Amino acid sequence: MGRLMLLVALCVLPALVSAGRPVSQPFVLQGRVYCDTCRAGFETPATTYIAGAKVRVECKDRNSMQLLYSIEGITDSTGTYKIMVTEDHEDQLCDAVLVSSPQSDCASVDPGRDRAAVILTRYNGIVSDNRYANSMGFLKDHPMSECTQLLQQYQEFED
Image (cartoon, rainbow, N blue to C red; front, side):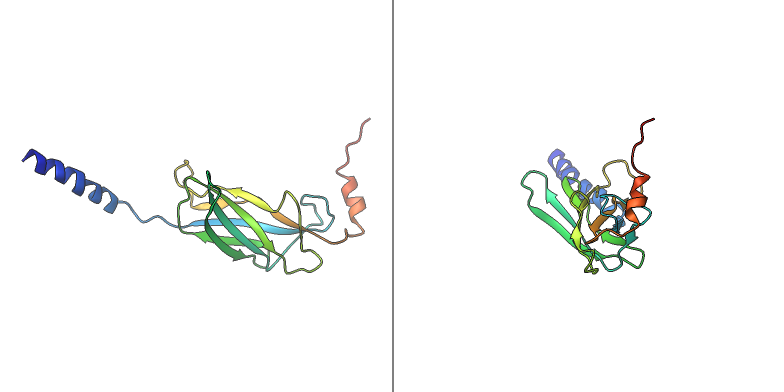
C-alpha cells in the first residue's frame, strides 16, 4: 500500500501541477532601427528611422554558443519592430540583431550598434510580457551637411 501511494505521488502529482499551470503569453520584443545621418555613432535630432529594415532575434546556448532559436521581423513605418517570441529562453543568451536595410545609402551597419542583448525569460522578476531592446543603427554613406553644426552642441567646452 505504501509503494502504491509513493507511485501515485511520483507520477500523478507532477502531472496535476503541470496541468494547472496557465499557458503563458508570448513575449513581445520591441525596438527601433535608425539611420545615423550624421555618422555620430548614436541617435541625434537628425536621426531618421528606417521602415522595412530586417531584424532577427537569436538565442544561443550560453556554454557552446550554438544557435538554438532564431526568428525575423520587419520594422514598420516608424522604424519600430515588434517580434513575437513564443518560448522562454531562460538559460540562453539572446540578442536582437540587424539583418538588412532597404535604404541603399544607409545600409552599412554601425559597429557596436548592430545588436542589442534582450532578456527573454519569465524567471527574472519582470512581470510584463513586453521586452524592449536598445535602438540599433545603420550609417549613412555620407553625413548630411547640417551635421557639423548639430554635432558641435555635443562638444565639451572648458571655461
